[in-house]
Length: 563
Image 1 (tube, rainbow, N blue to C red):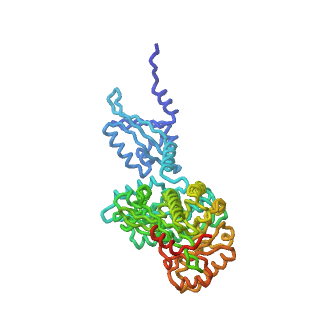
Image 2: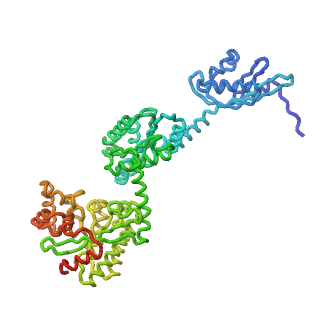
Image 3: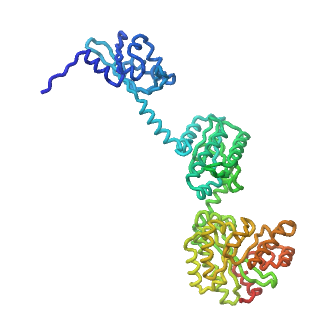
């Protein structure tokens, strides 16, 4: 059986004075107090100083936390338990966080006494602040992150008055993926860090700049005019255009900026960001390195885009695609040498949609793979029908998109089609654009060589619009060169363009490559190309793209004999 342990008052005070906490005891009737030695450790002041100056405790409290201590006094007068956290300032100027707990107590004489314990919680507070900082800031740039920005935008909208305006800028870097892929992620990270610094230097200290994701940044600016916003956007574009020097590498980038305004373009954070994002994509569409404001037209365009994307998934299943064919004639004899298969789409609600509109979306979504497979299958099937009818031309040309060319199954698909239809490979020609050929150059050359080994021919389309390097042209495994229509449009009134066309034909012939001119629309253009011995002509002067029945009529009349 344990005996009751008793301590003398002196022993109790000695024990309290050896504790790492500050203990205080106050008699609410006579204001007598006790302060333990812990005050010296935490407050940097001896207990004697607190006895000598009744108001000293209040003077040590951080000015921003005075209201907390005043509230505690009122609660103590009302006999309440108090638990508060506030900051103090030591004589050395050090700021410390403390947790102060006060408990009311009535002694045997009926005196109201408060007993309190003060803990130094500075390290815990610093750890909490660090965790909070990490939760709300991007670890790469140190800027507020997406979470912080969304919460700040929400609170700013909540506090906004009826005449307040909030301007949101959505910034996306234009060439960042190329930098990241070519120079590595470490260089890309350093570039993003420098970009964040430059963007921050373009706005006021009260404006918030945040890293949204990847190479996307957000800026929130309060109560600025459209003219002021234009100046800020232009300043950002200009400062980002200046070269970045990172690890002795000079890097050039640009940015596209989308702008939305509260409350005009949205009354909540999600809508404002979504609409600024849409405006940013509009800026990219119009050439990048510029800024665009959100508008209803952009929303309508985005709605149309979504309708097209959704429709693409059903178009094959519902047999909505049709193939049109455009003849390609031999310039010297004007007889049909080949046809180019061109896809057409009549959307059940939107009506006819231009390939220039839906093909990029099919490419973007990956739908170009099954659509391209359908084109290859359908065109080869039509060609075999023409062979049975005795009207097949010498060449069937099919366009291959960038994503199709990256398809690891493309070669096998071509071989399967050739076998399935007993198709003579030399009568099939695939067209790739110059920009596609340059992209992943070594891989492209390897894949084209594999395709040509099957006997299938390869034509380089849109020549002259991209790199146009003779060194590249010399290395391309191609069988023909196609001059882009933009050059043909200008040959009769622009002497420089005419000289370029002459040079292209001359260079191609020196490399034993036949030349096809597309977009020929006038007799004058035809005669110009005829005099230059351009091998093949294609364009509206001969025939626009036409449906199956119409191309068969043309083939019956004008097809050159096969060789």
